[in-house]
Length: 361
Image (tube, rainbow, N blue to C red; front, side, top):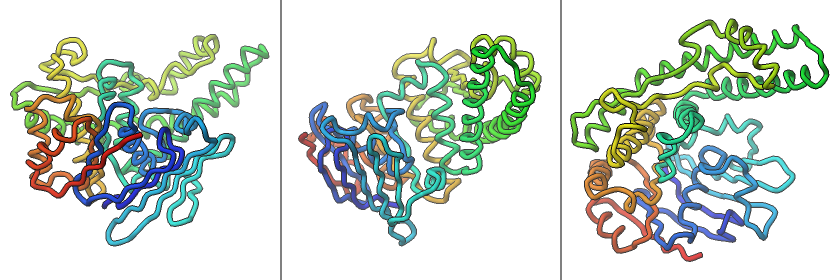
């Protein structure tokens, strides 16, 4: 699978930009703020129908416009697909494949898999559980459409239950029949998601550990522990037991939307007891393991997006990445950097074809 070209119209700071890509390595160079990262984010949009960074589509529209359009052509198994993503203020987002509009975005996700490595990934270690669940869900959803559709249904039901709880509070009423319906739906969806996450992590963690050993050249033991309330008690019982609290807060306080991943190094929390270097190795290993897992499950190599990677990593870790590129571990790679000279010096070591694009916005 390859991305052959890309065109951006009114996407962030790109009013009308287009590129034809190399099949192996493509590097965008330019000063900070020139829009290099926005190009990678546009590729993420084409693959997953959403931004890697922003939850709201409208924030990606150029300030002087009311819409943005992203166009790209993928080739997969000798078949071309022209993907177009349109976002316009006040209208539903539209994604088309060869002029055919998707009824459900979930039908598109997984067709053109992607893995994004960004400096903002530190949030996986430093921030709350939301970012870790997002990482986990992104990995599973790109090869397991049933999981993705179940997750969408679960999140929709959570919103409906929360709205019902708000209605209880504002109207001083209680509808046990409707609440029971939502609880049973959450129980069914929740157990599916819980089971799929456990199955995924059982296979994923050994791959992650292998990459960490290779990148860090160390013997430190790393691990990932799946923390879920469903490990402890029956979900329906938990929903019933938390009802008093939920009616006060108008929020559903228990469920798989509270799941977390505990990252450990030598048995201790990575967040509390690791160096910056160890954290960088941990994060890169998470992403490379995700890449490897998607490759095995889908039977094709995802596109790899590396944002500002040469500037943020030390020479040792850059060399480890270059070694993987040289061995053909990856397929098509997109990179951003502020230094053209540094990029050329590093990319020459890969023995791969590469293209460098100067970005000046």
